[in-house]
Amino acid sequence: MKKVREKNEYEGNPVGLSKETATAMAKELDRHLASFIVLYHQYHKHHWLVEGPQFRDLHLFFEEHYNEIHEQYDAIAERLTVMGYCPTCHPANQLKIAYLEHEEEGEFRIREMLNKDMDDEKTIAIELRKSIKKAFEMEDFATKSLLEGILLKTEDRCHHIEHFLGEDGLSIGLIARPEDIMEDGEAESRSKAKKKAKA
Image 1 (tube, one colour):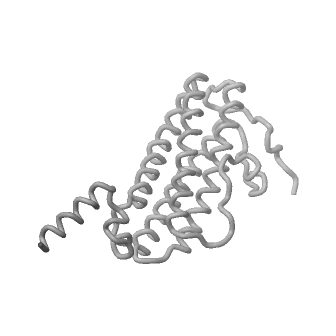
Image 2: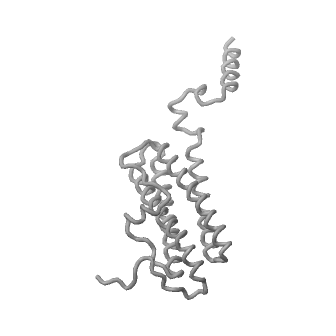
């Protein structure tokens, strides 16, 4: 096939952004696009492999997340085209510019998977803030607004994962003794109260 234009060839844009601004912000957006695609695949993997007492909740939770991320990276790619650039589309090239790493092949414990997801969401939030600041400095207010909306949802996903990783849960209650999950002083007080009640 004959290319219409090369990947990094600037086409110009109809919205009045300077070439300098469009080029700088397109590079930022392309990194986010690649990284969101990595996370999208990771959530799919976790959706397929999750099992245990909370299977249904987590299965649907991961599905909700990868659907939301798909919408977000689609919006990022669309913004790239507005700026006059072609998004990076080849998986091998996406891996080169992504700031997230793919999880290794194989199955992991659910808490490990959730911790990896939360760490990656946190990394995305940090990188988004950098790009938002840059967009503001370059007066690319539409990109700033787009990324701010994505940041809010990213932080929300991260917060929800934190709740799943909370220590007070049925699964812990079924396999652990109270003294294993209580603070030292609290466990000791409860033990003394039980002995007093028996006396």
